[in-house]
Amino acid sequence: MAETLQITGDASSMLANKFEPKRKFRWILEIDGIDAFLCKTASRPQLTFDEVKIQWLNVERKLPGRGVWGDLNVTLYDPIAPSGAQQVMEWIRLNLETVTGRSGYLDFLKRDLRLKLLDPVGIVVEYWDIKGAFCKDINFGDLDYSSSDPVEIALVIAADNFVLQY
Image (cartoon, rainbow, N blue to C red):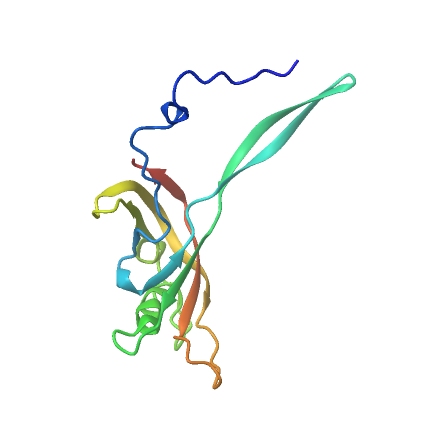
């Protein structure tokens, strides 16, 4: 039988007294060597668990398997000065020097990033430590004579670990 919700008093008594949602436009992504104000969009960390199936007789049980962190998608503005493309290329050159073809050491290439979500007055309310990050895919964008939109750079960033500090 269906259960009817019984509200004693005012319906607002069921709501939190102080409720302020986190907003999508209050955040800072800190990447060493890239100015934070160049960041236009960024995705938050995503964790996916493999599914392990245990079969026994005529039933099946499902268990969570290995957890795998997804990639971060970041879009940067590419102003004339400071050049976003130049800042990204400085990071890429630690992995691949396009002139000589030499590769770099992981110790120099991988960086720790910081993703901070802010409250209305600028206090950090959520802090992610992103460990061992590197650019997996870099797209310097397209150009179009019929558009006045700013040039953007799209990055796909892979990382070893994501730690939610608070």
